[in-house]
Image (cartoon, rainbow, N blue to C red):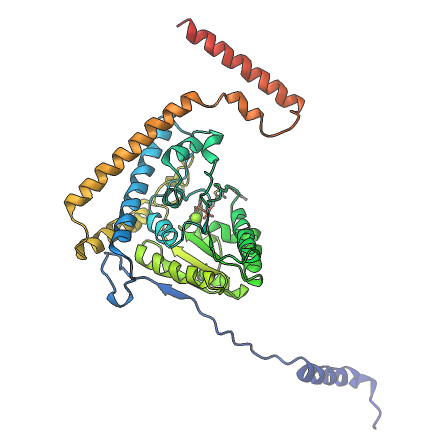
Length: 392
Ligand SMILES: Cc1ncc(C[n+]2csc(CCOP(=O)(O)OP(=O)(O)O)c2C)c(N)n1
Ligand SMILES: [Mg+2]
């Protein structure tokens, strides 16, 4: 073997390294057989794609319509009650009625609803009363109570945390060899939380019967969807976990129902989790403590108002001969009366309930000194107020 001149060393070793890398660490492509489906059945004006029309019984279609109208009117009343100081902060549903109700309507009563904080429409569908929602937003513990026999988890405010709770429920269902499904709701913002990714991974690895419903309403308070992620869709995040991901027109109640039905059926028959991305829009404020005019344009809101889920569904039902203007008027009257009666009952309860001092009772076994002081200060203030009131 000829001697290597010192000045050739570098070239020689470079050749060997390249050779080694070419053979032992090839640069090949792993083709992933993945894609994200996008589903819409009613177009923006409410015209139907007949081939895709799901089979939904007429009475369920009308129940869905009524629930969407009730959610809309309830929302409007909640905003005005908050502005009058009769309840505290509230997170409106407006625009997301189809996204919530189309999905939840697929569940059986013994399945589980795991809400975030904007799912009052889904909660009402599942038996939560309007009074208890009013109590919750009025600041009364009693409103957070889920009645025995109703499989709803309470409202979850820490963004994304509830996705893990749903997977826990799914694991428990598997452990008990049940056939229920847990459906969890969360927003576009929640997909940036670690909790969401841990939940997706666990859900897949343990093959849990969980349907993840991401309501992509385009905003996480003032953060727009485009600043939330560089991903083209939110549905595709499922693919990394080996889970099907479907993007759905979230303002089309038929599409949401059809996609949720497929996901729930798969979960119930042992096929594991699914991620649905319901593309929708938060037409109202983030909460009653927010002013969206500071970060988004009216034109954007107007554009989405033209895709109003209730208007589109109404057209479909009229075209189908299931609904006319007279019936709509009747439903509006009924819903208004139902909401008013619930407000009256809740406000009566609020007067009877809730010694404000109770808020100090549930946090600690032994109150720390600074809270004892605050409790005493509040007690004196309340006593002085009562004294004043009794003297007219
Ligand atoms: C862990 C956590 N971080 C921050 C907040 C404050 N916060 C409340 S709602 C919200 C935005 C949530 O956006 P998204 O998930 O899209 O749900 P949306 O409100 O649009 O329904 C934030 C940041 C919180 N509640 N929890
Ligand atoms: Mg959002």
